[in-house]
Amino acid sequence: MQTSAETVEEHRGGGRDSRKPAVWERPGGLPNRLMHRFDELRTRRWFWPTALLVGYAVEVLVRLVLVRGLSYPSVHADEDSYLVLARVLAGRPTTEMPVGVVIPGGYPLLISPAMRIADDPVTAYQLILGINAFLNALVFPLAYLALRRLGLRRLLAYVFAGATALLPPVIFYSQFVMSDTVLPVLILAWLLCMHGWLSDGPLKHRYWYAAGMGAAAAYSMATHDRGGVVVALTGVVLVGVLVLRWAPWRSTLVGLGMLGAGVVAAKAFAWWLQRQFTVPPSQVGTFLLEGLKNLDILQRTLTRTVGQVWYFIVSTWGIAGLAIVVCLFAIFSGRFARADRIVGAVMVALLFGTALASAAALPDDARIDDWVYARYASYLIPVAFVTGVAILCRFSRKRLALATAGVLGLTLVLAQAVIWSAGSKLRTQVFVLWGLPDVSFLSADWGKLNMMRATAAAFLVLAGVVLLLLAGGRKVLWALGISLSLFACFATVTITAQVSQPFAKWRKSSATGFTQATGLQPKDNLVIAWDMEWGLRMAQTYEVYQGRVWYLDPRWQEVPATATAIVTPMPADGKSPESYWPKSGHWYVDRTSKQDNWILWRKH
Image (tube, rainbow, N blue to C red; front, side, top):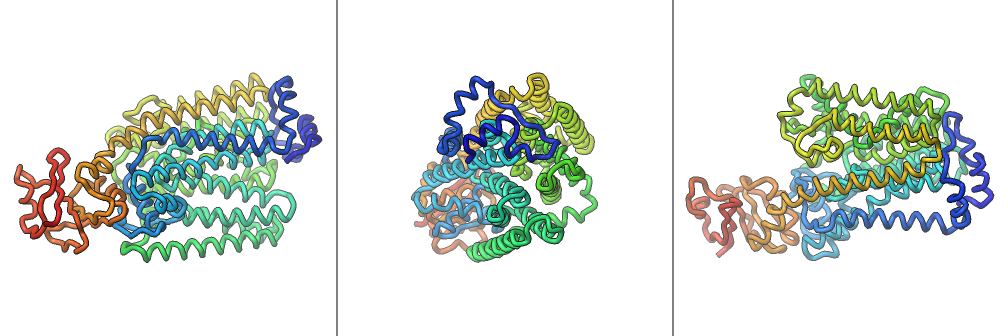
């Protein structure tokens, strides 16, 4: 916490920011008459901690309002699989694994307390969305700390941290039970700790930063397969810094020790979780290697990689693009501090590495969003956005204009490359709105992909920001921060209304709607025939909350003795329900639905 003297020095242009490299310039603040009103309060020790707590509470509240009314999983099979892992971690009985393999359990571990508290699936799901809100809103205080580290004054850092935490790509995935709720928080904490460890400061602080970096990287690996890339980059940085002596060797050893211990713990946790099921572990690594080695799909892989980077830039209205362009330049420039250069290089490597890996591993399922997939790179959105904000606030007018021109050129090249390579597939393949929320909002078209219109809209926002800065100077920064926060909130609310809520309502019939129609109870043990609708099979592994589910065909596979209900489709050609399973034995038809194509069987 700064003292009054430090605050006065900061107003004069000195203080901690004067030690930054010359490429940065001091950002301005509020008009003097308003600044004087804040001076007395801002210098009190309790003010900024209280302000951060209030801001965090507001961010949580926004997220809770957005998910009101949601009570069942709708993103199959991701949500269902995380929920199954969470129920096992909560001490409840195992059941069928919807995705067919055991995926990392770091995120289910965080939400498992909801499963211990709740006795029904609706209550548990709503509690989990509440946990999501508290976890995801941590982007706000971390973004504030990152912006302070990048040299912004407290008020500017506070306002722009609010904009960062309200970004649609940050909030969108937290509206569902998905690991992308917490991954942006982990990545932001990871790079924030890396920067603190590499920067000059008290040795004790650098120990803590190194330990935090190692722990965040290891937990990322325990949370998603993408975390393996995070661990690998962390190891490379630690070894390189140790060899080149760019940080105190003891702090580097602390980082290596924490990373090693965290990876061992993550592996042990994954091994224990694997033993709770009879399905194989995740095969993402195998798919990735096959995708990278297969030269026949090399063009598809590269096109998808380019498309993900394009989406990444556009979804942040070009501001994350500023971070990419400047970080690429900083890698080869001595005008930036070493910590800035290393963290910038790591951020760019993670972005392109993630895009390439996911592009190679994604199957060819004829979806338009596969070409510009948004989700996998989204965990870097907060850290790239705060870096872009620092560039807006601290670059000179000339450098800012050049960086903006570079981003515009890069984004247009990326978009044109995807359009040229994918061609008519961007129009004829399946359009899944859930996979394209940000560009659909920007192009004001919720029915098809329009890359150039979305690009134009994104750069209209960026151009407005840059032109206002060039015309008004640093005095308008606080107004820009508030404007971006309001626009981010508007975009997030609109996407929720147009994408999240309709998507969830569309899936209701296969979740709580099916449960109510069939009269299934949470303690039922349910067999679901393989030829039932895929989404229904996924959802019911969670809706059958205290019992268990099996996927099998009762006509030729043995029904478990503990099963209490069976769901099969209706027979074809208008035959009686009983004709589907003539040798049903002591099972009888309890309920049917021709409209939804199901039969519920019970024991005599």
